[in-house]
Structure formats: structure tokens, C-alpha cells
Image 1 (cartoon, one colour):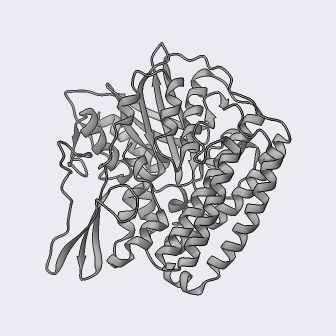
Image 2 (cartoon, helix red, strand yellow; image 1 turned 180 degrees about the horizontal axis):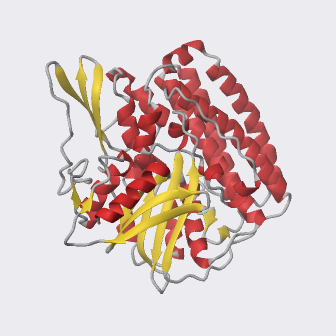
Length: 458
């Protein structure tokens, strides 16, 4: 196990780590290559614990806690030996800082509004945060265990419903995983239809995030106007797919029947939305009070973002360059030259600027995808012939990298399903972003990431 740990560590130093997970007998550490995701795998030795990689590579720390808790994998010298999930109604104790004048402030797990539960324990000297411990899992559903034994194709509906914010992205990753096992590549028309759906989902999410960031800066008109535009975008999702959350639009083998049945009319509606969004962005980023509130809050240095495995806008706002659509292009993204938006300061303003640039780029990508489709409808999915194997799918969702691993038996039923969401990957980064900030800044900093609880509590 030591030799395997050394090999993983070397790959983590030189490559792009995605995360890790365990099946019943194997350990798997994932990395992103230009050709797509790959695994380094090793059979578990019950007599020899695996040297923990979390202390040197924090990107693996949560994963190793989860493997120990859910699969009974033994790690020597883990970064955090606490259970990952709650057991018997008790959540793991929070890690707090100690010292003269240090106090603890707890927020949650019940919050105002309708967001899901999570507990945040602040250690602070006065109002300045010296440590934040984020504890999720209050709504852990055991989705991965529940999928075991199910026919892979029938599981697509459940995979789409792990989260409502990134349904299209995760469905796309799941479809790519199964299609890699079946050895097929979908038609150009289908690939472009998938691009349209995923970029539309990005528009919905980025509008929501910018509106919430305006709220965090106390500019209520920016919040209400942004959420009204999000509603218009969600209605476009319904026009495109029949569902406001794009459920079941992307399926293994293609897209569902009836999706984007009228690309020309959809394109006209999208142009109207784009004009309204441009006006909104000009007003939002032209508001000096908002910009001054965003600037300097919640800074994540590049070294911290890289060590913790930050993905998506959180990664690219801190000097990162990885965007799966360009780093390891898939589907219709192989045919487009994507300009990756990035910044270096790593604060709330940087994250919002990245989302603004991506939002505008998404409209252009959709227009190009619709142009390739023309008036043609991509049609329903093709049949997949599946058997034993491991399929991987990796896409760039609204919040960053979405990885899906599917292990199938000879009857094409799921032996192991694992999803590493962008929210799961970024939650530890939120905790680090609060260091040195004041407690009242937490809503602002948190909303600049605007992560999903359901993705982490899968």
C-alpha cells in the first residue's frame, strides 16, 4: 500500500486530482488527463492500512474520511479521523480553535429560508474568524448504496435527481460514463443539443449566484432583478426539455424524445433573454457600492485553492486554469475554441467576475450549438449494449468538475456508483475563505460560492 500511496502522491503533484473513492475491494484515485478522467486503483489489503494522503493533499481529506466511514477502509495518520456522516442521530463534533479570547459561534443546522441543513462552527477572536468547520450530512440519503443492484439504464432518472441545480451536468457525466463502456459516440446533432442544455443550466445557476451575491452586498434590487431573470431562464429550460430543472433531458445514448424539438423558436427566446441579462450585468457591475463590498472579501489564495482541489469558478477566480470543457474536451466542446474566464485575486469580486464572463460566453456557445443543429431535431437515444466494466464521465458543471464513476456487472447492473460533485469538492474551500474575515461576512462569502447541500449529502 505504501508504494501505491507514493504513486498517487506523485501523480497528485504533477497532475489534476479529481478525488477518490472505494468499492468493496478496491481503492480508486481519480485524475483528469487531456483525454478524460483516469483512475489509479489498488486492491485493499485488510492487513495493511493505506497511508493517508489527506495530510499532504487536502483534496483527498474528505474522500478518505468518507471511505473510512462508509466502506471501512483503514488509513494510517488521516488528516481528520472523525466520522464523515452522522450516526444514530449524532453528528461528528466540530473542530474548534482554542486560545485566549477565542470564542465559538454556531450557525445552523437550521437556516432562514428553504436551504438545506448544514452546521457552521466559527472560532473567532472578537469578530475575526480564525477557523471555520463546516459540517454537512444532515440530509444524507445514501443514494450511492441505493443505486447498487439497479439496471444502469434505469438508474438514469435517479441520477438526474441527486440535485436540481446541476441535473443536466450530472446526467451528462453519467451518460458519458455508460457510453464509454458501450463504445459509442453520439451524433454531432445530439452532442450539440447536450451542449445547449448544459450551457442553459450554467446560465440559470450563474444568474442565481450573482443575484445572491447582490443580496449578500445588501443591494436588494440586484437580487430581485437577478432572480426574475433566473425565472425566465428556468422557463426556457421548460421550453427546451419539458422540465424547469432539465430532469431526464440528457439520457444514456443521447437526449430524450422531444427535447429541443424547435431549435429556431428556442433561439429567438434565448436572444431576448440575453439582451435583458446584458442590461442586468451592466447595472450590477456598475454599482460602486456592490463592487466595494465584494472586493477583498473571502480571499482564497491560489495555493489554498490548488491544495483543496477547488474546481469551477472558485478555482479559476484564484488563478486556476482548469475547465474540463477545454482541459479535457468532450462532446461538442471538442469542436469549439473555448476561452476560459479566470481571475487571480480570489475574492468575492473575482468569483463574480468569472461567473459574469462565463454567463455571457454561455449565450454564445448555445447560439453556436443551435447553429450546428439548424432545424434538425437530434432525436431519441440510441440503444447501449452494456456489460461488466468501469465507466467514467467528467464534465464542467456550473460550479465546476462533475465526476461520475459507474461499476457494472455482467448483467449491466450497478455494482458501485460514485459521484464527486463540484459542491462537494468546494465546500472545504468555503471554510478556508472565511479565515481572517468577520463573521457577518459569512453570508456574502458563502453566496459567492453558492454551493449545493444535496450534492454533498447524496
